Length: 406
Image (cartoon, rainbow, N blue to C red; front, side, top):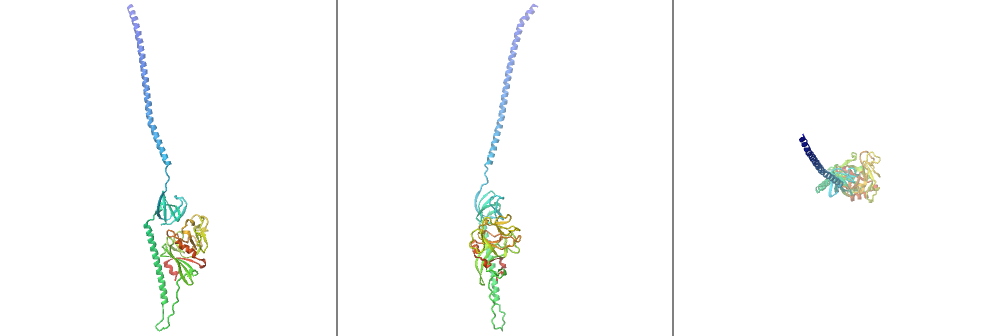
């Protein structure tokens, strides 16, 4: 028993020491484990942070790139240049009736309407508009209504005009020859028999001249003849009567309506036809000063309009304010209306018959219903006509000459 107690006592000290050693070793192991775990957790946290930063970097770069692109597009839109005017120089012709505007837009003010095949000087282009010069004025025409006026076009027009004038001259010469032959045959007719020894009484000489009652009291006639009712080319003669003799003072070529002639009784507004028949003279006007006209002469100012609104109280009259609708602004035609005579066509203001039928200076082609001729001849005409001589304007196709002329 004593041995057992002694054994236990001796081993108790060793157990305590062993136990204490185990406790220390366990504590050390636990400390090492805790330290290792903390280190691993920090490493993981660092990796996560690094990974997140790497993930954020491309996003930031992408955002900056998008922002730069948007800024570039905004700047490009801001500095996008407006349409530029490009200078171009050539002669053009209108392909149909077109508005001649103050600025290149369909909503801009219309200076005037240009007829088909009107010749203009092209100055340049901006987008779909040509800047042109016409009748001393600059304006704009939509490019889809304008083509280049080539040398071939010019030659074709000259050839056509030449043929028209030749046909007109030939027709007039033939008509005069027929009248001369008829007069000669009448004067040579001798109904005497073989047994009649008395000489035949000579037929009275027939003076050449105008025989229409409408012209009987006139001693000044402006004769305008065309080769046909559809021709826009005319031969024009100024006849003056001295005693019983009619003589030609001036002869020139001119133009009438672009669609030819229409007899006064049938003529309607906006047909581009010149009234055929006998017209009187009411007065004159012009952009230039009075050259010496014996009629009342009005100097054109910017506020002068010819009212063509059918049914208006001032229809076919000169007025001093814009009536709107259908009208002519006289100052817009400084070439045509440098000098002009006013005829008495539709002086009674019959609805839809039209008006504003003048004798004026040539433009680039046929007229809208007027008679035109070179400037020198218009000036000569305006200073020559005298209201005391009751001048008349006779406009006819050459085939009608026999109705008015002996």
